[in-house]
Length: 322
Image 1 (spheres, rainbow, N blue to C red):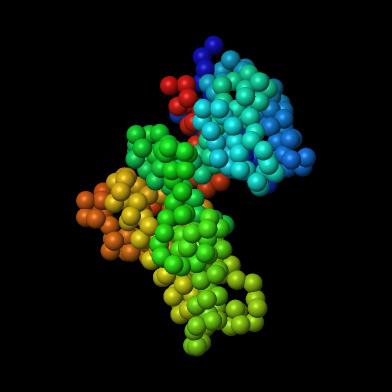
Image 2: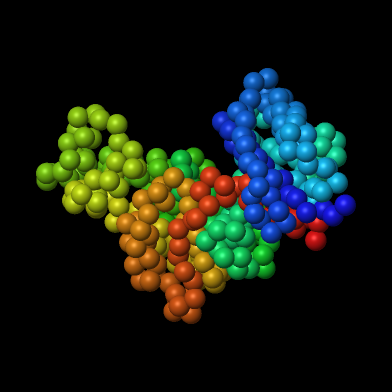
């Protein structure tokens, strides 16, 4: 029986997403379950095993047809041992032997990588990267993460820390980051960083602005509110967005100058601002990028949304068999 199906798993702190797809990346079935982090996350791997085995029976899919299983997970992944550590949002306080446990419970070969890396591979393979071999992914959410794809494969670096784009210094001596450094990109272009910028700009602004009034009144401010106000012409909100775009343009130009990818793909919740944000980032990118990369690298919005991680995980499984 020909092996022609892949299984991708996107493990998150609240939800585990699954997809069964063809070897060329066409999703045929997908589902999700809640992530049970009780009892130090000891239920997570058994729940994944139970869910996959149940759905293979439900869809009457012979296990002999499965090429392999891939999973993107929070935390630091040791490629050689298949262990995961530092996944605190999963309540995994100690290193977890995830690969070995999944393989024992499923009977398939399993490939595991960090969730941001998996999303990067998904966008490179089936999303905005157009399956080009050199793509960088930047995800703007609560924090800023990313992944680097070189020759069609993820770059991990000497200790697995390659692609920590959020900790690129863009403002020396700037905001204190959770990593201990000052001025990291994450502190200015994440959802939380944008809100912090908005509050600081509002404190220093004396003119009329709805954003200024909301801050003064103690109203909740989100990155979406900042972008929505900017698009209505709010001066202060536009000042914040322009600063965010400056930092992103600087960071993407530096990435392009070093790696010369065909595309830098911007995803995550903040990217929902769409072309309004993208066009401003592109302008700054053009100002900072070296000509040879400026003419080659396209800064683009992600296309796969919440499916990026599952696509990338499946791609991991496919590459592991090559």
